[in-house]
Image (cartoon, rainbow, N blue to C red; front, top):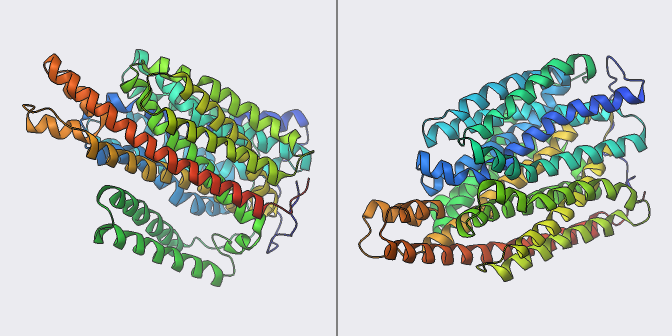
Length: 515
């Protein structure tokens, strides 16, 4: 694929210190690089099936439960751009190995967290070290695969792995939770990262920017000052409406974002080259990335609870329901490489995104029904659409920049992914939680503490019902399931509208792209 315009600015070219001249060696290196890709993306969603167990064990509030999910991609998203720039400076393989060691250590801490607050803190630590892993993988790939056709296929594998990792998270979590406690979903990372640390030094070449800019601490602070208040404000808005707290947080975040952009435009070597967004294909692809992952993570958030707490499936059974969609996502991500040779990328991406619209629309129609088959079909459609859209958009993002800025460009791509994950959980999760809280009715006679827990989360209602007399338990569960179904219907309609918007973005911004 090529874009209609050249990148906005040219920079120095970076060459790996140990270039891989053998084709087999390049693909072996890609296999090693896929280990952290799968791991970090799995960690985005692996907790979805563990939430009922975490609710029962740690007894978090509804807000704490959302932060357990949200804080990891939030920290990851805020630090990806700084870490991408840092990787260009200190060496991408070196930062990859640092991140692997730290991520493994924090995984152990998270697995044995004694409270909801401790788990939130551990998830934040995972986000910090995960930000070291991700920019390194795509930027190393950009330097290893210098042939355009090889690189396109390699990026397709990378994107398919990244997207499929999110879909695999609930399945992997389901298998582990069938036999072990919820902390096991974190310990999964340890052997994978031990393998990475053992093999990467000999199989993955080092590369860096030969003339990097200074570490920009102010820009790093501004990135975090943008992300955190905006997500907090969205959560507050979904829970209490346009309160001064919600509006103030969003305004603060947007102001910090404006200062960040202004600072990047004025620096000769910016941490994030925001001028790249002036290229329609680049900016459009980044937005498509964000909205695609928004739709995927938002869907997984509620379908995992629906399958377990409403339909009564075990974690493993619920994970198997999502297996066909996961396979479809991988297949679509690889097949789209050939498809764009014959069909314009704008049409391919728009068609893929409209599949996600159909998936959300179907979910809205069947919300509250006892059948599982429609949810399975909906996830297959959504997964295929996301897999195809992510592959094309990632290829456009990475191929439009010179090799010396590969770390920063790949960080933008991954930041879009993580921001989408954050917003998918924050927006759809908060709307779902609010709809549930307002709709559930607790039978009279239930103790106040139990009533409060039952109105916070669906998992809380299930836990409280287990200790009530049969008549009260039945009434509470019926009300909780109805309230949850109403929230699923609302969030699905919002998801459908957003994916239609993403398809329009693809048609407009990618219209000049040719293979």
